[in-house]
Amino acid sequence: MGRLDDKVAVVFGGARGIGLATVKEFLAEGATVFASDIREPAEKLDYVNYTHTIVDATDELQVSQFVLEVLTKAGRIDVLFNNVGIHLGKSLADTTLDEFDHIFALNVRAAFLGTRAVLPHMIDRKAGSIITTSSNGGVMGRPGDPVYNATKHALVGMMKSLAVAHAHQGIRVNTVNPGAIDTDMLRSTLASPEDFEAKQHQLVASTPAARVGEAWEVAKAVVFLASDESRFISGIVLPIDGAKSAGAMPGNRYSLDFELGVR
Ligand SMILES: NC(=O)c1ccc[n+]([C@@H]2O[C@H](COP(=O)([O-])OP(=O)(O)OC[C@H]3O[C@@H](n4cnc5c(N)ncnc54)[C@H](O)[C@@H]3O)[C@@H](O)[C@H]2O)c1
Image (cartoon, rainbow, N blue to C red; front, side):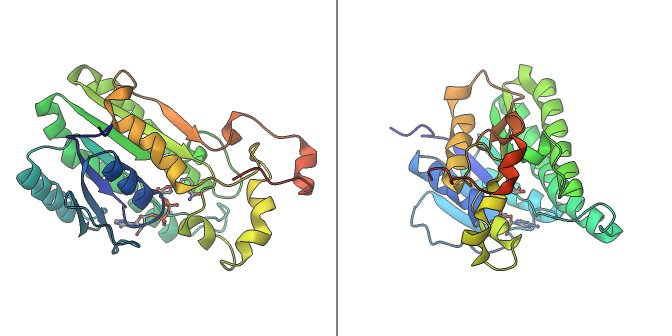
């Protein structure tokens, strides 16, 4: 028996990385999954209870049409996973207004549109679990990506507000807050993919676990929040970051002379 048997899940940003890993965990746990993304999935998944649709999560019409299609086909939505996001690793001074508007229009607007499209249906049914991917940059200040951090804090604020507003209607709203996770997004912050092995010490110098995380390690937490095992849990902000947001590491850690943690 799967932990998500009989659940219908909608995923935004499900083509690769954390989104794809979560789609796979949802399917393995018995859910019917309606995934979407602006791109085709990086892996072909052979399940009868799985579809992938090309949807630009920042486009109001595309999002509402997609949600309507799911409701027409499946009759209900139990789980919404808002996972779309892009990174911007620039100082505030170097960020252009276009870049600022673009990252907010993506990271915050996508979750707003997805949630706004699904929420009325969940209110009618008096049930539902909404999970949004923020970041540990949504609970702590990180020096290298202030505007990205701002978008991820915005998501935490929006989701906490919704958790409080809709708890009495049986709707749960939570965020997952990953640290450095080995995905295309993380690797694209490096000069070249080959840089990854060389730069791992730098990437995890401030992570007590001394390693990057894997996409499936985030997906497992999303499954828990999607499932009835977490039915009295709402409004939480769940770091999945090898203790990074729990506190600061000793200064000598930045010498990069430490052993990588076990992956
Ligand atoms: N990888 C990390 O280290 C890390 C850390 C903290 C938070 N996150 C967050 O996790 C989420 C997933 O990131 P990831 O690392 O798997 O990155 P990723 O780039 O592999 O995945 C992001 C997905 O969003 C999709 N997307 C982008 N724009 C879209 C749009 N307009 N409409 C629909 N889909 C769109 C991309 O095609 C991609 O499949 C993001 O919100 C990211 O900010 C990642």
